[in-house]
Length: 96
Figure 1 (cartoon, rainbow, N blue to C red):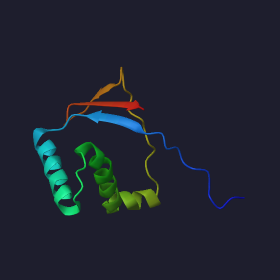
Figure 2 (cartoon, one colour):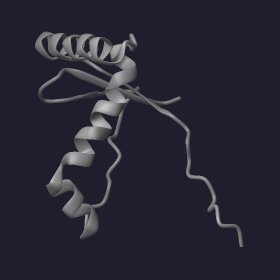
Figure 3 (cartoon, one colour):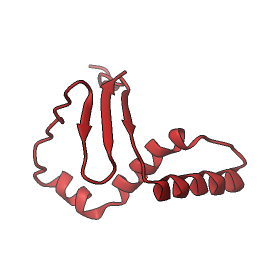
Figure 4 (cartoon, rainbow, N blue to C red):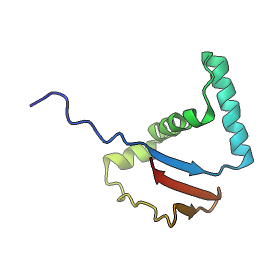
């Protein structure tokens, strides 16, 4: 038996979403601070997955739920690739 287990699915999932102008500005400000801190100019779209990952990693209630009994994951039903959300407008989820 190998020490290295079978690698997980690494197929990226493309998610397109609409942001409020305020949130977009905040993300641009974050990217500017990132550039000033690390000297690397990273597009907001490249930072978002890491921002979301850091948020999920720091959410104590989520971590506790993961250790216990999380509710089952339900994939959104997207008709023609679009689903309306309450706050941010249209979200499109497609697999790359």
